[in-house]
Length: 434
Image (cartoon, rainbow, N blue to C red; front, side, top):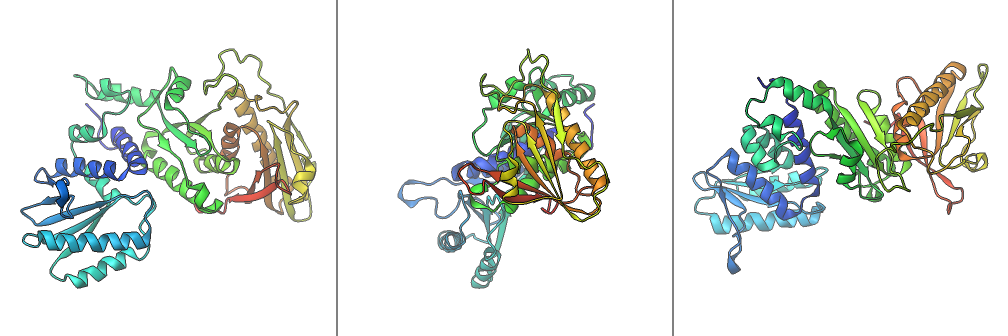
C-alpha cells in the first residue's frame, strides 16, 4: 500500500512545477495554466487568438459563471508596463465580454513577487467597476490547484517522477518499493551561475545512483542584485525545498559553478541538517564524475597560525584556505588584518588538487577544528574573515561547517587579479536572513 502523509511524488512534482515557472516563456506558462485548470475544472474553455480579432482580451473562461482569465508571464515584471497591461486587458474584457462578465481574474507568474503598486492598482479598478469582481491568481495559487489534482491528472501535466515510473505506475507497486527507490535516489541541486551544467553529465556522475526527479535550480540573479539580496533569494529557494522534504530526510547531490561567496553561502544554508554530497568538475576529463583511479589522493592539509593559548584582547580572526592557489597574506591584509591569522593549505595548491570526495571530508574536518580553536582560544572574536581559493565543491563543504549559533559572523570575499586590492568583501554568513 502506498504510504499516506508525506508524499515524495508531490515534492517531485512541486520541484518540476517551480522549475517550469522559473524557466518558461509567456506562452509556456499560459499552457501550464490551461493544463492545470482544465483538469481541475473541466468546464474551463480555452480561448486562442483568431485572425485579426485576437482573443478579445481573454485567455480562457468559465462561461456559465462569467469568469474571464487573463494570463501574464513576462521575463521581468516591470511595474509601469504591468499597470498598463492590467488596465488594457481589463477594459478590453469589459468591452468584449460585458454580456456575461461577472469575474475578471489576473493570472500572473511572479518569480519574486509583485511590484508594490499592483495591489493598489487592482483596488483602483475595483472602484472603476464596482459591479465586477476583480481577482488575481499567482503561480503559487496555481500550484495549490495542481496539488489537489489526482496523481494521474497531475502526471499528465508534470510527468511521472523521473526514473521512477516503473515503481509508481507499475501494477503491484507497493510502499516498500517506493521507500527503497527514495532511499536510493538523491535530490539534485544545481547552482550554475557562471556556466550551464549539462544534466546528462550530472546523471553520469551520480551513477549507479540516480536523481530523484527534476533538479532544483539555484540561480539567484547575481548580476542585478547586491550580494546580500542574492543570498536571501538563494536561501529562500533552498530552505523551501528542505522544509517541504523534511520528513523524507532528503539527500542532496550538489553541482556548483558559482562565485565563491555564493558557493560558501549555499553550503551555509544547507548546513548539516541534510546529507550532502558535492561533486567537482574535472577540467582535464571534462566530467563531473569522480575518477575511478583516484588512488592515494592528497589528504595532507597543513594548518598554521592557530593560537596555542587564549587571546585576551578582542578582535577578528582571518582564515586563508589555499587549495587551488596560494593566498598571499599581503593581499588579505590590504583589506583586513586580524588579531589571529590562520592558514589552511595543501603542499602544492592546484586547480586539479581535488580528485576524491575523501579530500572534501578532510577539508571539512580541518575547517571545523579551526573554528573550534577560535571559539576556545578567542572568546572575544567578533568576526571571522574567510579568504578561500579552491574548488566550488570545497566552498560548499566549508560553508556547511559554519554554525551561526556557535560561531561569530563570517565575512566572505570575492577575488580578482585585476582589482587593487585584489579582494572585495561580498556577503556575511550569519547575518543574512535565511
